Length: 357
Image (cartoon, rainbow, N blue to C red; front, side):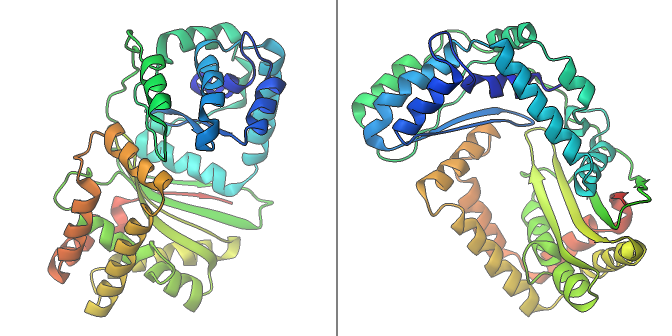
């Protein structure tokens, strides 16, 4: 636990040639921004800079990817910061509810596990160095923007690795039976609600119908959950439903924060909306369809957001025309298709429920 996170964090905390302060100073001088994140499936290392400065900062990026020092003092500081932030987050109902619902949905699979303070304490530089040598080789490189041919040639030559990483490939998580977890905090004023289940795969023929039905339910400000539970009943300031996919599974989730005394009323209201979802009008469907298509198109209006879509296609091994095909399919869905998906995939008894507060 947390080995990938701290290995990623330590990339910018010093190399054999440059200290963390020196790395930060160089990036600042050239107006470059480094993005590091260790997700459920992949570690992402991103560099954003002016085209004219790319050849100045690329060697530094290579150095971080080849010769991180895993300095003990920097690691100690990083661990202390992470532990403090984790301790603060564990006081937040929404954070804890998110941990609980993932556990209910994915069980002991990596998608269902959460870091603990004890995991932070067990991290040592030797463990990170071993993980780095065995697992930390670039698998894909994505470039967006205006790039000089010489820089491209440099990237192709320098980032090429003759050795393939020994990837950690977990099995797909088993589908858990729906369960309920009420975590009571007597001194809490608010309660957090998280409901969820594993959805169908993105290549399933019903998937676009599921996405459109979910958009009507809670995917935008004009959705049913927002109108009926936020505006009409006044039970929450914000509520949503979303469909998210990782590489080996996905999560269809509903979330809201409510006053503790409104918890049961909110849960009942959400279940009512799930049951009533198949009963929608053509106007409601049209509005949700247009908003959903517009949001997908908006996701590719810059070179960076377009690159994220391309990256998603590669990393998740989707067809190259996946997103353009998705828009066409959403546009073709009729009331009968969406109604069937709403009836099939939105029954309240299919969702696990976690509440904290």
